[in-house]
Image 1 (cartoon, one colour):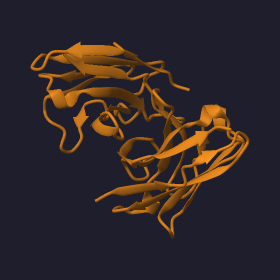
Image 2: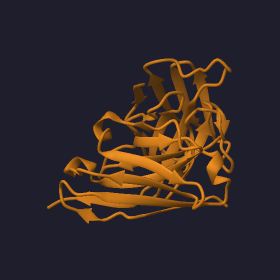
Image 3: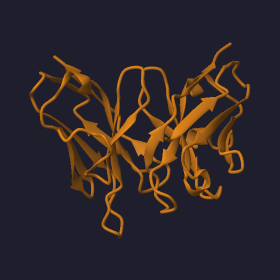
Length: 122
Length: 112
């Protein structure tokens, strides 16, 4: 059974930093791209970043470029999202998500974690 | 970035009646292999999204057959043949052809 367990969500002041982790199990982690998708309160879904199974192919949406860094440790079956210079607009539930197909170069999501709440406020 | 547009944004439906949601993309989602990289998700209140349809028309495992997806290129449709109370929530289309992944705005299906 695929499981994705996020951690690291917290209340942080504007300008602060936070690192989210997502521990994966139930599949061959290193073979699959992983993504981070956020959902601001009462809003829709926004995929902020993703990377391939080998750690390449990283992408970011414009609003987080230069502030967020995605990475993975395939020996620990974990994907990370380092978030710096946080603003109120980054307040959201952050979901870890798994690609549906191994190594095809496309980005599809078949499994989602339960989410980690990040609140940026003074 | 590919822009995804859904309609309607709100859809009140009586149980037992059909429902339909459309999704258009700013560029074709069909790859040279013939696949359309368009997925549909349902997010029930207080839950994470769940995959309903992938590659435009293939039901994910465990999804009831009252859900169907169709379309190609830039126009896609999700249909529910007979809505049930458990189908309430927000429906999102998503393109996976090109990074960054982008979603439609979401359609709220409300049970009358």
